[in-house]
Amino acid sequence: MNTRHDDGALLHFTTGRTTCLQPSGEMDATVYGVVDKIKIKDSRTC
Image 1: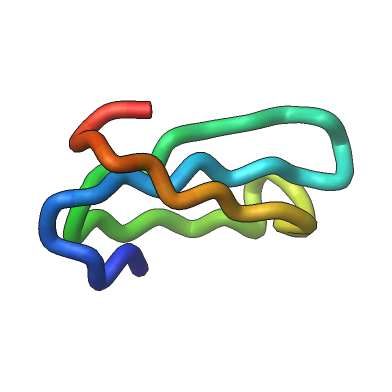
Image 2 (image 1 turned 180 degrees about the horizontal axis):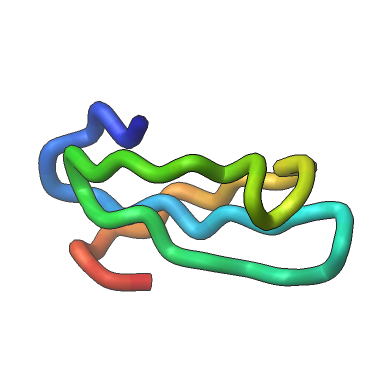
C-alpha cells in the first residue's frame, strides 16, 4: 500500500520488472516477485 497521498512509488523486483504504485494505491506485489528497491517519485505517475 502506498500511503503517500501525492507521490507515486516506483517498485523494482528481483526479476528486473518495475511497476508504478499510484498515490494511496494498493496491489498484490507477490504476483511479480520480491520487491528489492523502492523509489518515491515527486509525481502521481512514475
